[in-house]
Image 1 (cartoon, rainbow, N blue to C red):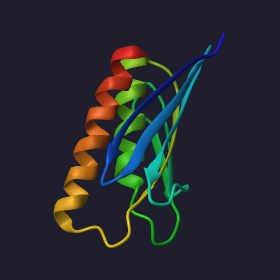
Image 2 (cartoon, rainbow, N blue to C red; image 1 turned 60 degrees about the horizontal axis):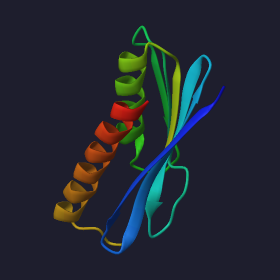
Image 3 (tube, helix red, strand yellow; image 1 turned 180 degrees about the vertical axis):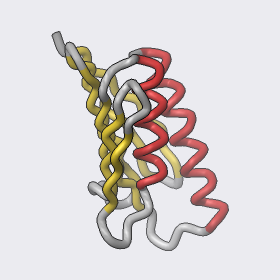
Length: 114
């Protein structure tokens, strides 16, 4: 049976969200938002700490997808795939820190309900 969860928060007028599908033997997560949702990076993580991350040129979501995949795989003891793509035009360094903080909050929310 597939169990689906959605968590989100609005930041700078746009939603940042995560949709997770807990499968019988794995979890798939889509982390997206901002002004232009997209696929910037993908991480596959195993419960034993194995990890493989791919980022498309010019995208900086690899750190997010890897952090999320490892955290979920560690907590649940299952294989995890996280696809991440969050974009805000001309985000400042401070705004990027706020975006990362919101992503951390969403990860905690998701971990508590998976």
